[in-house]
Length: 190
Image (cartoon, rainbow, N blue to C red; front, side, top):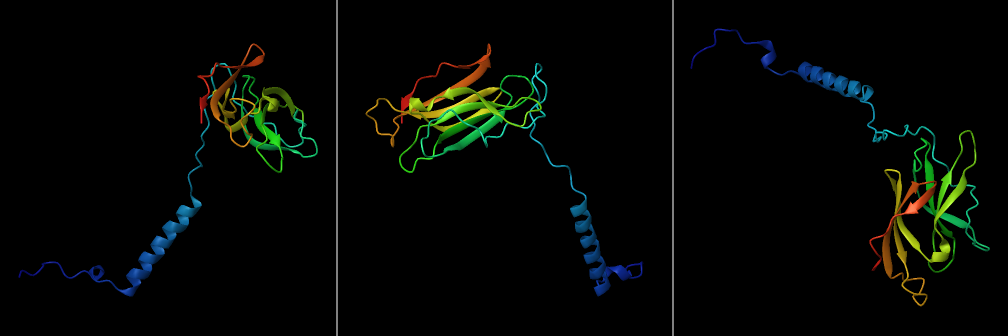
């Protein structure tokens, strides 16, 4: 075996001081990394060329007098979605509302709320689904300025309220100062 021409180096053998130094360095890195964090990611969509970015808060659904007759029970907001539906740079809120019935499956109403700049109270400006249509809404979203919904309905008045037998998709878009429902592909049985 050939001997090294270099004398043995002191740092080639671990001693307790080396472990203390390593632990201190690791603790310093961990502490520094907890202080220096990257900015949180955002999932903001780029504004369309004809609209300005939405900076206002979407209208709240609390305290709204929805046009639904619930008798002695109160109206409940089941789902909601927000987005700029008319391209004015201010978001609207789409609310799915039904009566707080103790039994059965009460029908839903779908309403569009808006709030004027400087106002503290929102108001209902459109009814997309009337509760009188005996429809239930299983999903609602606002995408690219359109309201998208999945609806459950009934093929006849003889179908019990517990068991809707038709499923449909709906899309509404603001055109010519009104919400226009696109022609559905057709309801199908569930």
